[in-house]
Length: 433
Image (cartoon, rainbow, N blue to C red; front, side, top):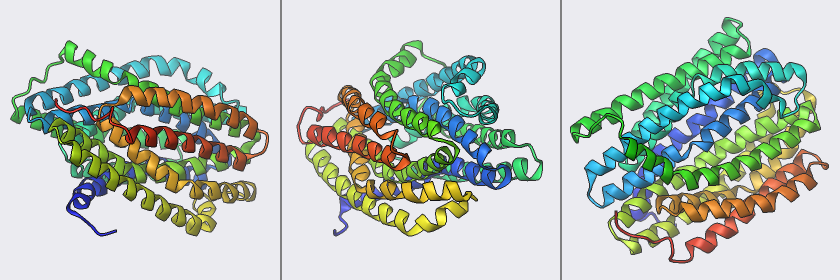
């Protein structure tokens, strides 16, 4: 399709967002590769369990980025830059408070949470070690989410890219040094990631606070504003809880299938997450563009941008699916997988690839509706699609990892139906600040 002015605006936001988004799964992919080469299959499985718990924590708080992006973009589109920045500062304080609470609650509960996955004792012990150390990086992770939301709302996706690339490079170097050089085991992998995430948060704070001072925005916590930020994110929290229930159920099912299945599922999940974040780059552009356009009262531009971004999502999904099929024979070698894990991984990468075009449309429309502030609908849609998924997951769990992944594909189809139906209507097109 020919490149239009609107396409250039989408790409201006989406291309840097792509780099920033893929840095997060690359953190874990680097961990998996280093742990796989240095520590073996048991440690990879432990990392899969702990990584799922950490991803759940972070994703439950993704409203810190998504909600902040929508509110800041809408206020920016309406021309109220001071309120936009105040909304962003409130989000940062909320992120810090939640991060400290997660450490206080998560540290003593780490063994109980890991036991829920039913892993072998040696895997469970290593998973607890990784999880407890990684929890110390939670405030940094959540501050990065909130800071990223502020900058995206201000239509800046270049700064998050710069910070993400720097953090990823530091994470890879530290993990290799701690695990392979110093022999710290799985704890070294966790410490490397914590250090990289915390330093990334410091950079975000410096950038956001500099902008806040320029606009003469008060930096002290405003309890009313912080409460408002939390309330606005509640519907997104419900939506995210539904997403995490789906992925946790799949992880538990894979864990109970055996060690090779769990290791293959863990690696395939990281590949899928990398692809999802790549597609989500267009959704990030959707959040920023939709919020700004509706804040300015421009419904026609909102509709037009939605159509274009949906096409970008579809064709990007086809391209990524083809890339997975081409790379499929080489993926097991990256993680030094043993023959049993390799066989399972090669099989499951087929459905991972084939569902990518559907994922492309789903992620884009999800981002558009988040940017529009249509969180309540997304919450209810998340509930219904999760209810539809659970029977399919339980039925598939007795037929192996490929069937389990096909159940995840059916869940994406259910999400596609709910999102297309909503986007075709007008209820989400609410204008003004």
